[in-house]
Image (cartoon, rainbow, N blue to C red; front, side):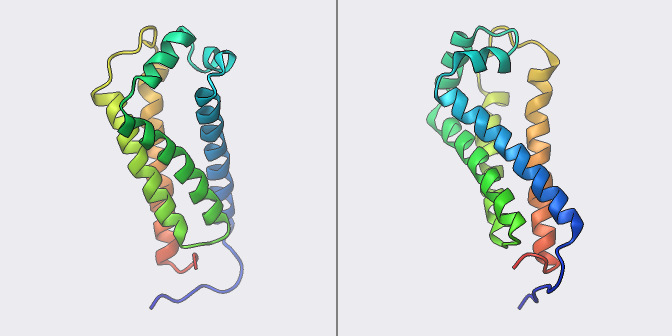
Length: 151
């Protein structure tokens, strides 16, 4: 039986939790703007890509990759909120998010046709950044649960 840490929340948990919440909010905003077909947003968020072509490419993703995208975004946002309230369920939310990231970005990196106009380094590096951040917050929440910080 794990013991629960009583007392003050470590400062690093607040820092990681708030940064993770901000990251999750950015992902949620991107998801919502894309799903609402906001062409002005798409033009800014996908430099060098025609927004209509970018939207068609996104909507052409198989259902498992689209579900994975949603799971990755909303699981990460939920994980950040749960981390901030010191819930052990943050680990599960981040694990679900990581599963979604693997489904969505796995398809994009391994199986998707190239997106016309997306030849800059940003399009190659950003998916790796998302994966690394997802793994880091999953590991962090798991380690906080093991230390008894999360209840």
